[in-house]
Length: 368
Image (cartoon, rainbow, N blue to C red; front, top):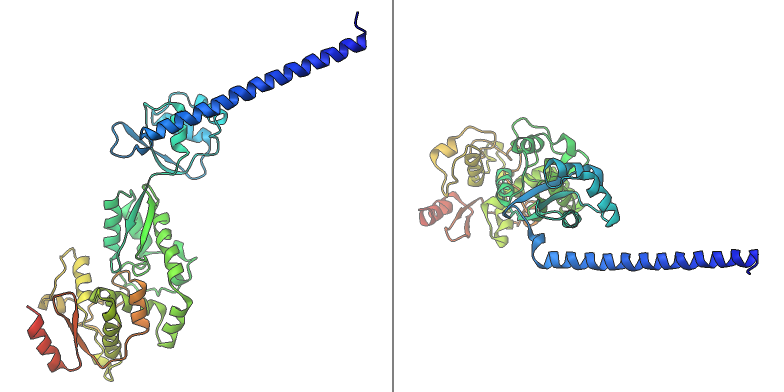
């Protein structure tokens, strides 16, 4: 017979062996489950299921709110009738390692997907759209392009934030925008032209901060310093740049166009310091819901507005579009010329003149 000590030792050894066996079996099945799960997700991806989007038959849009936990997401999925058992979804999320891995933003799933597949979909990058905004677009054009690209937002809210950007005063350049009741779209001029990635359901503040963050990077300290050296504010420089941007698309001409406006702004007679920009008239036409014109009409020139640079001297109350870096540089470092006039030749380029007689000859030749 075994002694009591030997039995105790044997019992301990049996327990340890069983524990190791159980652990080994657990590791084996756990590893097998993970491998099988990875294989399922790989097949799921290969079959194109992750390409589910707005046009997919039976697709359900799921917007995961910022800061939401698995339990809240399960409740959301239940409300949208994507799943039936929120407790099981929450439990499986922990078992499968998805708890805390769900990405905020817009996702698309179908009610035909298994819980595992739904978990996998919600852990992937949210659906976004890539949108390019060329130099010289107005705020209204920017807004229209966002909508065309499939970004869902409240237009009225976005309009209100652009017109009254009090929530964006953490940006130095926004704080320095002068208060002016005549100004159209306060943030116009600062929605920097570039290519952006937006979540399909980005909120209005996020949309504007995406632009403003880029603007903050693009507006270099030297721009502000140069504007001050020229006797103007950065906002005035951006305003002038927006006009230059919409007067010519030819990079090599921007500095020359800038020189014309600088010469006009510095006429000896203050009453003669009118920019007489057709680009500004076209901005006013767009604001009225009218089509742009190649040649301004008498009614356009006579239109009463603080922005009408044919009727008013100096710069308009604010930018007429969102200019790029080249136009900003042209406004700050214009060419040194004696030109006072220019006219579009009709082929995308511009012809310049020093005297009124030269300008009239150019108009007769090129304006049809």
